Length: 221
Image (cartoon, rainbow, N blue to C red; front, side, top):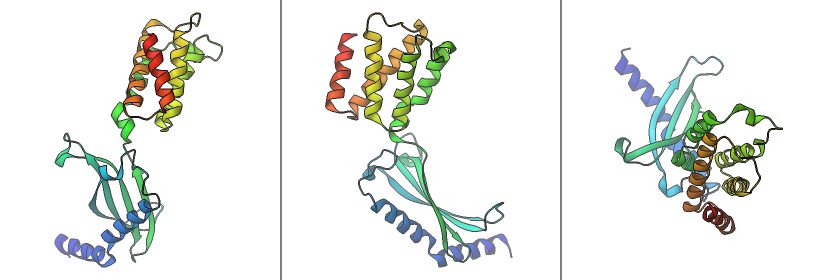
C-alpha cells in the first residue's frame, strides 16, 4: 500500500464515522447549555468556528489508538492570516471503532488578558520591587499585597474585585503617613494602577459606584 492509498483509506474511515459532523454537533450541544456565556471573554457572535481536520494517534504511551477531530475558535484580527486570530479549540476523540471516548474544550487566549498583556506588566514591576517587600512584617507589604491581588483577581476574571483593590492601593498612596515604596517600583505601580483603572472603566467591567470611586481617586492625584 502506497502513501496515497493509505491516505484514502484513512480518510474514508473518518468519513464513515461522520467525525466532522459529530464534532460540530457535540460542540453545539455544549454551547447550548449556556447560550449567553462568552467564549474566552468574547461574545458568541465574535467567534468563528472552523474545522481544522483529523488526526490518527496510534502509538500512545498510556492510551488506546484514537482519531481526533479539531474545531478551531477564531476572532477577527487583521494581523493574522485571513484576518483570523486563533483563541482556542474543541477536540472530539473516537476510538478506531467510531465510539466517542473524550472531548476537550480549550481556551488559549482570553479576551481581556490578551488585550492588556498583564503578565508583562507584572514582570516589569517585579524587576523593580525590592525583595524585602515580600516579608510580612515589612512596612510596604500591605501595598504589595494590594498590587498582587489586582493582578490575581483580573486574571481570574473577577473584575469588580480587581477594581476594589485598585481603589485600596490608590487610597494607600494618597493617605499621608503611609510608607511609600522605592521610587522606581512606585513609578511602575502607579502606571500599572492607572492602566488597569482605565481598561476596566473603558470596557465597562465595574459597577457604577466603583467606577466613580476610581475616578475620584484619579482626580486627587
